[in-house]
Length: 161
Image (cartoon, rainbow, N blue to C red):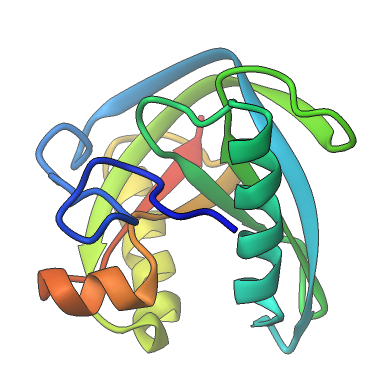
């Protein structure tokens, strides 16, 4: 079991600062992630907590915890999603992927039920910047328990251009 992930107030998720993300262009070159798949029902994840616990235990055991946390959620439709967790090195027995590209980031705050509204706002934001969107990732900055402690539920939408 993972005792303490990060040096933070909760011992779990770090407090998130939206300033370096909101409205910024983010570039990634061969950023290494552990990739896992998740079943969904009408886009609602099933077993997300179990997946995160399993993946974080593998990452901790391998000593591959990244300095700065980044977890990308990639919705694959009504019944599935991929979860990409940034790691510092390869994790034995896990699927790895590298992500490269330029992304426009926009920070949202509020309950997860606002996700549809956030996607529409992101689409309008991208249009206002004159940019198309190849792919859209969700960066959930804290787990629900830490979001409750911090009093903010920040989610970053990353649109690949």
